[in-house]
Length: 108
Image (cartoon, rainbow, N blue to C red; front, side, top):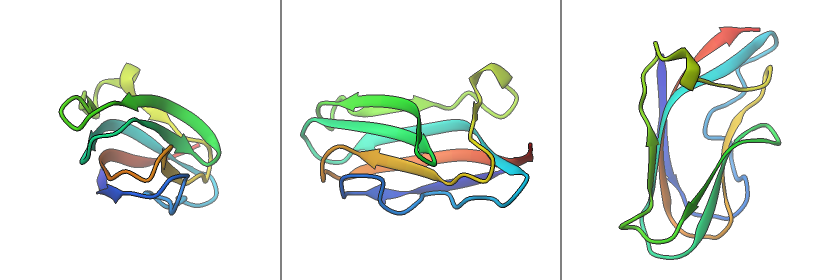
C-alpha cells in the first residue's frame, strides 16, 4: 500500500504523480481526494497514461472537494490502471489543486 500526495498548479498532464510500475505490473487506486486551493473553474482528470479514468468539475475552493476513501477491501470501488502506465492528475487551468491518492501495485 502506498500514498501519493501533493499539489498541482499547471494545466495539462504535467509530471506523473505516480510513476509507471514496470512491465507486467499495474497501479490499482482504491482511494482519492482532490481539493481546490483557489477559486476558479477547473476540470480535473485522473488518468492512467493517456486514458482518462475519472473526471471532476471544481467551481470554488469551498465546493471543490472530491473524495472516495472507500478503502482497499472495497473491490467494486477500485480503479485499475493500464499495464505499466503512470498516473496523472490533469488540470484544465493553472489553478492550485491538492491530490491524495491511495494505491497499490499488482501483477497483470
